[in-house]
Length: 253
Image 1 (cartoon, helix red, strand yellow):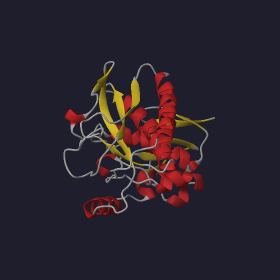
Image 2 (tube, rainbow, N blue to C red; image 1 turned 120 degrees about the horizontal axis):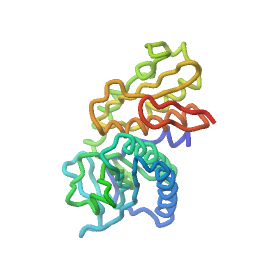
Image 3 (cartoon, helix red, strand yellow; image 1 turned 135 degrees about the vertical axis):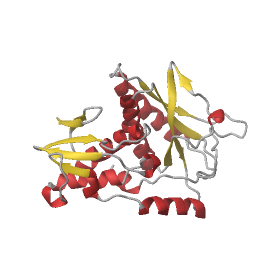
């Protein structure tokens, strides 16, 4: 999993090669496990669903612009009510699927707005609205120059570990925290983030970790909170589980 954390990128160009049935089966099984976990929180309903080709050209969804190019044959749809915790859960469990896809040799990209909604298979499921999708597929042999430029621009805006941490609620230096906490922060900075601005801050107080978004400006950043919590947990190699919401603490096992 550590290799998947380091190797994952937001893939914005796709090859015409279809995903093999065995890999789709593994994704479906993982999605079922994620949905079973999310179902335990009945107050914040959320659901993940793998969607395949359904359009006349054999693809699953079209984009509104050229920010992503190439055929997308499969995507994971995230459904929820207009609820920040439900979106956070989609971010957390959806990112687990992203990392599985990476382990299977597949690329992925979280997409909140640039898809054409008229080409989606579903925009609603049992009272839950589609909130976001994760495209899946193979990278082309050569990444188009525009997509290379987008990737480079995003990396130039990457924050430093000390910018996403506090100690007892106050700014601090990396030398003030243990190595496992720094590893968690490093893993967070490897993750995707909505509108390419990481809003999540991790606090260490009396040995306990919590996560919040003091300067949250967009509801799509609820996905960031879930994604970042998962990355921190994996990077720091923590055993236990997060409290949902803000400030959500990590409860060690």
